[in-house]
Amino acid sequence: MQYRCMRGVDRLLSILGLGTMRLPLGPDGRIDRATATTLVRSAVDLGVTYIDTAWVYHDGESEPFLGEALAGGYRERVSLATKLPVWAVQSRPDMDRFLDLQRARLRTDAIDFYLLHGLNRAGWERACRLGVLDFLDDALADGRIRHASFSFHDDLDTFRSIVDAYDWTFAQVQYNYVDVDSPGGRRAVRYASERGLGVVVMEPLRGGTLARPIPGAADLWARSGPVRTPAERALSWLWDQPEVTVVLSGMSTLDQLRQNVASAERARPRTLTPRDLAVFDEVRALYRARSANGCTRCGYCRPCPSGVDVPRCLELFDDAVLFGDPVASRSGYRILSRHGGGASGCTGCGTCEERCPQGLDVRRQLRALDALFS
Image 1 (cartoon, rainbow, N blue to C red):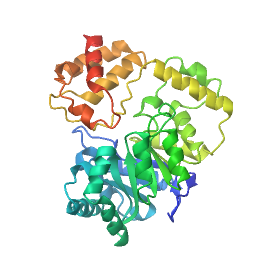
Image 2 (cartoon, rainbow, N blue to C red):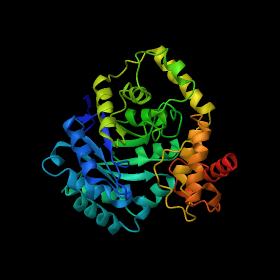
Image 3 (cartoon, one colour):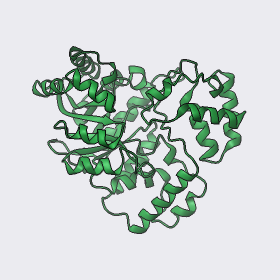
C-alpha cells in the first residue's frame, strides 16, 4: 500500500480509501453484516487506513455497522470520516445532536474527519446562517472531531468560496478521467491543493461505469502501457496526480478489494507518459460520444414518490447506449416495469432532480428511456 500525507494530520493516509455507501447486501436489501465485517477488517489488514461513511448511507445503517465492525482494535488503526447531514439540520443545537449521535453509533469518542455533507451554494449559505462554522470551532476545541472538511456538489465559484471561508483539512470532490472538466474536477483539485488542502476523491469509477469496458475502448487502451483492467486504469489516472491524497472506492467484494489494493501498491505519482495521457483523452471522448447519462448510482434520489426505481432505470439506459447492450437492457426494463419501477410511472414531479448531487436532467432521461424500450 502507498501512503500520502495531509497538512496537520499525524497519521499517513492510504491512497486507497474504503467508502461504505456500497457495502455487500443480504437478500433483505440490508447490509450483510458478516460479509461486510470481513470486507472492512480485510481492508484494514491489507493496509487501508481511511474509511468513509455518512449519516444517510444504507438508510442510516452504515454508521452503526461500522461501530461494530471496527471493534476489537480496528478503530485505532484507521482514520474514520463521517458527515453532518446539513440538509436535515434546523438549528445550531441540531448540529451537536447529530454529532453526538454519530459518535455513539460509531462507538468512538472522536471522529477523525468530520465533513459537511454534499455542499452546494444554497446548503452552504443556509448552514452558515445556522452557525455551522462556530459549531466546527467548538467541536474541534472540545475534541469531538479532529479535523473539519467538506464534500461538494456545485459550481467552481461556490467551491472556491467554501475553500476560502474556513481552515479546512481537505475537500472531497467527484473526480475521474471522464469528469475532469466538471465543477469538482481538475480546477477544483488544483485550487484546493494550492491552498494547502488535501483532496479526497469520490466516484473515481463513476458509480462503476468506468470499471466496465465500452465498445471501442480496448483498441485505444492497447496503445497505452501494460495490460490493466478498466478499473485500474481509472484509479492510476488519479494516483498519478500528487494533489490527490486519497481515492475512495465503494468496494463490495473481497475480490474488488484485493484488486484495488494491488493497484494501489503499484501506483506512483507522475508515472503516466504523455502518450498514456493522450489515450485517456481519447477514451474520455469516446465515453462522451456514446452519451453516458452521468448517473453514479448513489441512490440519493430514492425514494421516488411514484415508485420509479430511478438509479436502476438510468443503469439500464447506460447498458443500452453506453455499453451497447440494448437486448439485455430491454429485458431488464420489462422486468423492472412489471414490478412498478419503470420510467413510465414518472409524473414529472422533479423530486429526483432536487436530490441529485450530479444535477442530472433525470426527467428527460426517464422519458427517453421509456421511449427507447417502449
